[in-house]
Image 1 (spheres, rainbow, N blue to C red):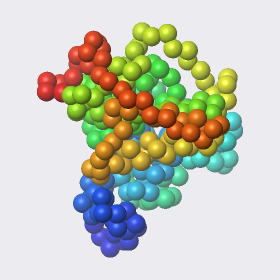
Image 2 (image 1 turned 90 degrees about the horizontal axis):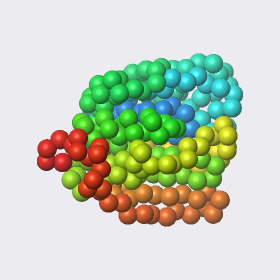
Image 3 (image 1 turned 90 degrees about the vertical axis):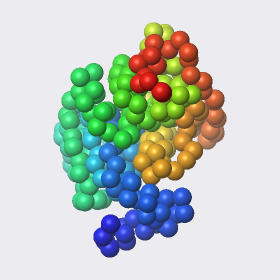
Image 4 (image 1 turned 135 degrees about the vertical axis):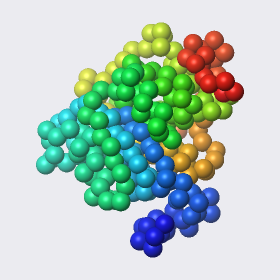
Length: 253
């Protein structure tokens, strides 16, 4: 770490739990971010600011005027750009020393098989169950920690699914793929911008802790946020012994 990098990250280095060792791990780390919208915006900005050495962004959408109320990585001038290009521009404006790879595509099973395997941590900022389950399956298969968040209206949720720990549930243990969940979109029900930002910021925090080696993570807990009452609640999560996805875990996990 050169003098400029040490100065840039000095407030993290000063933290006893973080230190130079943690910053070195973060600088050598590779984060995969699925979705560069409301959740992905604070994730991308905080990971870039923290100096994560390589960040890969995946999103097939373009910046729209309706995004700007909550998707803080984007600007009015960049309406019409791909979200990954817009986010990368914002990230490099904060920290030009990091490597950013962008994929303006929808994440599918084949792409995820390659991208997840290469990452140290995966942050799911997508907005639909199909993508979340595909990301989870890839993370289980390659034993990569997954930081998953969601937000709609005034409500948000967050958890870490770290199947490197044999006791940790995966996303499908908690939200089975065949369950009858009602999928809702911001375009229909709306989303309070600061709630989306709160969950995304916490996702960035959990991802950085995993990269820096700071424990404990949120593995085994589901954090629920009520933005109207400004209240957090925690639910304990358990691994489902009958989960079909967990059968894909590498031996020993």
